[in-house]
Image (cartoon, rainbow, N blue to C red; front, side):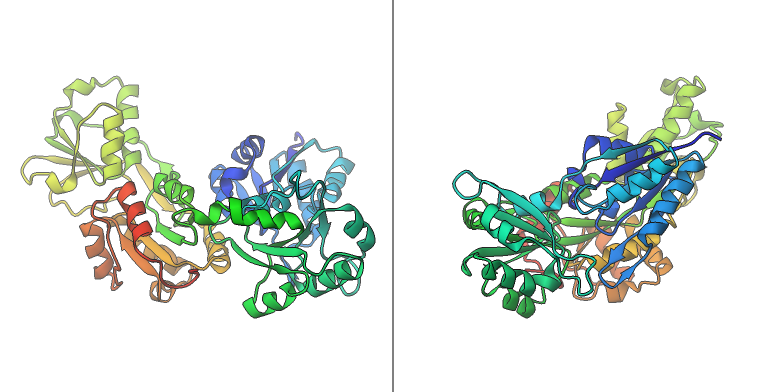
Length: 483
């Protein structure tokens, strides 16, 4: 058996768009991914469907997998001939223990590559409006661990050298040792008025900041109950934040949105919401299996209804492969959603929504299931779609880390599958959405939400991405996690 290969990849600080091109390419070809708590789980959706996902998360009070076990797993999976990705938050070379992992892999002469990532110590300050260097304020920058292997976990640092030689200091994961850090910086010559800022969940839409000075920041942290994961930044350059803060001014900053999902493909709506500053968790993650398609007398129907955007390709691809002249299909085309309409439009077909479909005439429904109540119809099942079981625990962890304040149902079909998926996670939908703003896209969606016993808080005038974004911007946030 041939030996596999290991990629030690920096996932970046949180915003999935900040991963490198090379890092994303490694994920897309991975057969096994070992990922950390601080690597955004949404990156795992770029992996192949059959990729094995192994959580290696570390919390201050416990380890899911100890470092020795992680090293052993990397070697074991690579020796099985697999392409293995070790996905680590930030940059793997900055407190990422990549040296230990690389040494373990090299010991067995396994090929490997180290893929750098954007470090949180630089990215989180920039998302808070603070460059770590500036020719008028800071000519030097240091990243420093805020805890070590000592008995009390307090870092043994050259405090005098830091104070004398470094203008901007970024301490990683040091909230618990913050009083110790401030005391030592002041004791070794830093003015007690030196600005300090804590940036929690930097580059995420749930990013929070807390600002003070060396003399008062520890008390502020206690009062605000501020916690890790946070970057602690110390230095005069923090004063620039008032002028160039940008991320926190985005229209959907602070929105932590749960988006019901009906498609296995990446959501354009989610992408647009993220671009406006929101955190978006999509659920459920779908896994699709294509089925053999028997076209039969497909040219004889009066109407063809496509149940999903994917069903359009699943229908036309075998038609082309089998040499059927598309012009012989006399049916009018209909879509179960605007996405399906757009998928048909891209192939040069004018289609209408299911609501506009007449009762008379023979009907063929194309898609992955029988979710439409359309009376007498024939069904062409092109694929089987089911929730990806690997992602259920991942979703649970994402909910634990986030504080959802907005729920979006994009279609009527999304309501039932969302609630059913929650049941498989052991989550009650009514508990989850208590005090959460529930927004529906379209009247039919609102009806489906209310039939499920949920309260619909609002609805944009039209069921479009643009209208939804405008609605969320115009209507005040409410519920948990709001600022």
